[in-house]
Image (cartoon, rainbow, N blue to C red; front, side, top):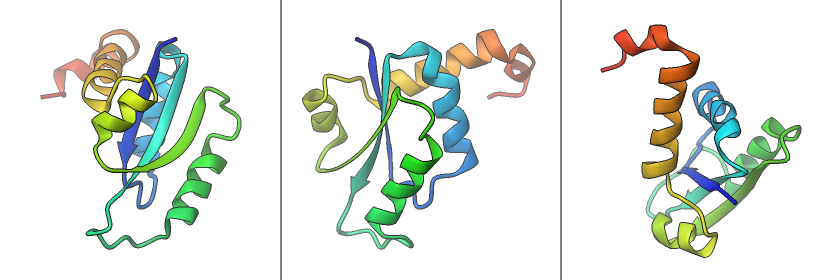
Length: 109
């Protein structure tokens, strides 16, 4: 099973986040949208609100799971047997640019 983790604060989740996740769906069996909790960061919205927004956004996509974690993203990925943003989402973005939107290749630097 190919799992990807898309981590962030998602404070709030944006249309850009949503677009990347939806475009990456064909590449993975499961995408975990993971909110990294950082007690040193002041967030505009509560963790519960951010979790609910993400769940609502992807309610019709069973391959998208929502979670939160404290600590290192790499540890969360290991615990969930998944690839991290650095490998999975970058790969997904490259695939999207090369197969779905070739006209974007010229503007992407």
